[in-house]
Each structure stands twice: as structure tokens, then as C-alpha cells.
Length: 415
Ligand SMILES: *Cc1c(COP(=O)(O)O)cnc(C)c1O
Image 1 (cartoon, rainbow, N blue to C red):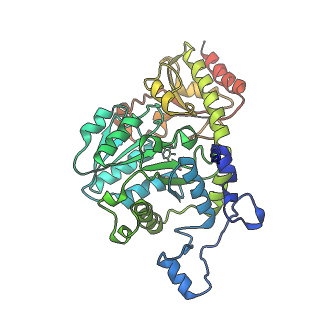
Image 2 (image 1 turned 180 degrees about the vertical axis):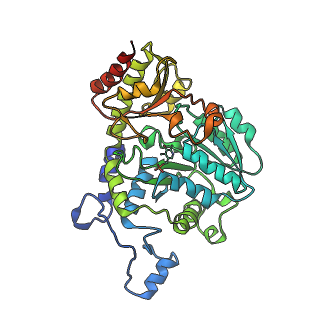
Image 3 (image 1 turned 180 degrees about the horizontal axis):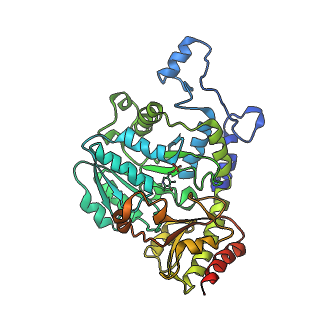
């Protein structure tokens, strides 16, 4: 007897809800808006509360529509369980609230999403030691490890300069030391890369970005890959110690972070994200193709000083990206020659929208030093390699010719 080959990425997502009990044959899990759940008798209700019987208690810590999305994210990431939140930042906040305590030490990439950088500053103010390192170099991570190190946190492709963490070797290092390895996979999405492949224990995704994909809904998720031994983690509360090691991390995160801090995703948002996720692979392919063409066009233009895109051979981690990622993603950034003002250039774009946000179907552009990285100040920007003229592009799914023409036309204003 031959075993059937597992379905591919998109087929799995499209048909996942139907693998479970479905109401009226609906191919989508319906939006369950109930906040509370009634049981036949008080004994059953008590059993649900005591974890002896599966079931929902209250909308803040679980909902059937949200559970259907969590299951899809686990499939996408090849994880054992996922937990959804109102936003990506709520998911990152949950790591802090649920797993870190005063006196702990964490190592994080220095090239970070701006708000994550701000969360780490808050951690530091609350008694958690922080080492910010250049995570493209595993030696810097290794040198920062102390006996109190609980966690290494990196992003896959850093925004906006597209540095790629030394994902595989950091994974090996964390495994040797028994340290929890947390990878923010937002920029690659589980279609381009699964952090489990490099040993991550927890994966973060902002669902707002590529997974939902249309710039119309907020959400975040944590996925447990099953690789981390939670029984060895010092801060698991005694009531979760009774569970199997594999369940302890998520049980604690669901209670201590999601339930207690309450950044729950709404069932409507979960439904919208699940619909968006059906086309994740198609959009990531198209965005990656468009981004590579645009990066090549910009790189060949004499008015452009430098282009940062992992798909270019000139990118310092091009080989690593080619080895680990299915394509190079939608994020690129570039610097114009000093004589061209980046605001003047952006004002000549007709299609690309001046807006923050990433992983949208529409192409978005932003002068990063003056906007999303303004608050952190010039010194920290210099450390992150963010010059004043840097323009970030989140490449959309427009027809390639239209997109290239828009950027080329704007450049042609500066002959
Ligand atoms: C956007 C983003 C987040 C935060 O996600 P929100 O859904 O906007 O809260 C976290 N990490 C990365 C890498 C992001 O790009």
C-alpha cells in the first residue's frame, strides 16, 4: 500500500476547514460571534473549565472561528499549535508577558521592526537584560550568551535594509545551549520560509501583512513548532507543569498573555485573514517576481546609489536567501544619489502609494528615516544603517510593466 503524498501549501489551506466538522457544508468556517458557550449541564461546564473536556469558555481566550485560523497557521508553519492575537505586536507582547521575568537576559537582532525595538526597550526598563547584536553574524550571538539567556529573537528579512539573520547557525547555537529560538517570520511568510526548518521553537507572524494580504485587517500569531523542550524552561507555572512538555508553552501563553492581557482577535478579523491566506502563495510569488524586476531596474539606473534586495547577487546574504527561501519576498529598499531629494522623487510616483504597511496587494513606498524610524533618533538609525534618503518599497501584485514604468518615469524626472 502506498501512502498518499501530502497536499501542497495552497491545497492544504483551501481545504483545511472541510477536514473538520462543517456547518451546512460551508467551505469556510463560519463566523461564530458568541462570547460565551452554554453546556448541557453544570458538570460539563466544570469539566471544560478543568480541562477534562474540550470546549470553549469565553471569547477572550478562544473562539471556534479563531481556532480554525490557528489550525491553518499551524499547518502553514508545520507547527503543533498556534495562538492568534489582535495584532502582530500583541503576539510579540505575549512573548514578553508570558515567558520573560525580571533578571532574564535576551539576545535580539539589532535590525528590527521599529515597534519590536520599542518593546525591547520596555523590557529593559522592567528588569530584563537586553543584548542587541548583528544577527547576520552568528559569532555575535554566541558571544552574547550568558547563563541567564532565555531567548534569541530574530527576524528573517529585516525591515527596511533587508539584512538576513544567520538563521541556520543561530538555530544550531540555540539548540546546543537549550535556548528558546524565536523567529519573526512576517517578512518571508510561511510560504517562502518555515523557521522550524532552522530549529525555531516559536514563530511570530503579523497576520496583518502578507498572510491577510489586502491591507484591510489586523492580526498576529505565535506558533509552537514542537522543537523546544518546555519542561526545561524555568518560568512555566506549576499548573502548566502537569501537562505534557509539548503543551506547556502554549498553555501558559494562552492563559498568562492572551487571557490575562486580553489582546484577542475578533472572529470577524480571523475570518477575513483566513480568506486572505488562501491566496498567500499566489501573491508571494507575484510580489517576489515584481520585486526582483524592480530591484534590477533600480540597480541599473545611474540615479540610484544602492538597492537592498536579497534577490540581487550584490546582496551580502544572497546565497543564504537562495538556500533558505522559496523566493526573495516583497520588501526592498533603495537610496537615491545624494543630489536627488527622496521626497521629490516620491512625489513623482503615480501608482505606488505613500503609506506605511507591508505585504499589501498594492505597492507602498515610504521615506523610512522621516516616518517609521523617526522616533528612534539619529544614533540608533545610524546603527541600523538607515540613511535619510532611504526609501522602502513594499511591492504589490500590480502588472509588472505598470509598476516598472511608474518607478522609471519618476527617475526620468531627474535627468
Ligand atoms: C508589522 C510587523 C509586526 C507587527 O505587526 P502588527 O500586525 O502591525 O502589529 C511585527 N513584526 C514585523 C516584522 C512586522 O513587519
